[in-house]
Length: 212
Image 1 (tube, rainbow, N blue to C red):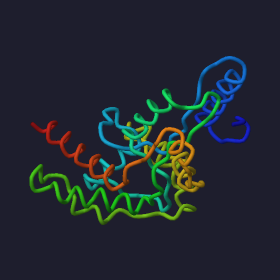
Image 2: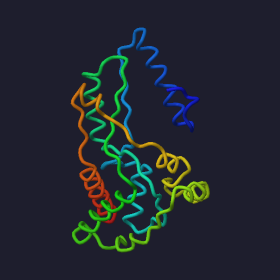
Image 3: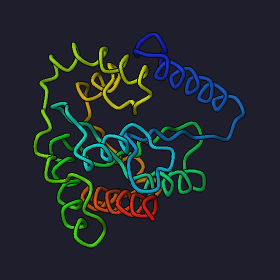
């Protein structure tokens, strides 16, 4: 948890906070910590990077995707894990709340499948048929292209989901174990297929409401 061993301000802030909590727990603080992996799922009203990517993909406006993958966990499972840890977690301990490792290619396939199934009953103007045109960049090429797309997205005020940080995450080790959380407070993540199906259905419903 040393800030000097991780890259980026976000990761450093997390490491610093974790150190402070664990140090306090050794002395007097009754606290434990959870470490979620990549959080996804329905209900993301603020439109985080993953939700923005899925939304752009469904609209046929995602020109680039990155080869690679990561461990993604349903936001509802993280919420349940937080509650369970607050009740049953051992003070001074940390628990990984992970889900399942899945590639970006597989994610887009599952999102596209749900999008196609919902098209006839929800709306027809999203260009779901053009989703197959999304180019999948190798990680090496993605590292070179990401700074340019990040600057352009900031300049044009577009959603930020293709950034140097996101590429580095997809190239990192994404194999995590939630065994400690499962043993301590029966944490069990749902299948990623269910998460992506519910998230896509929620996006479709949000778009329908926006058009009414």
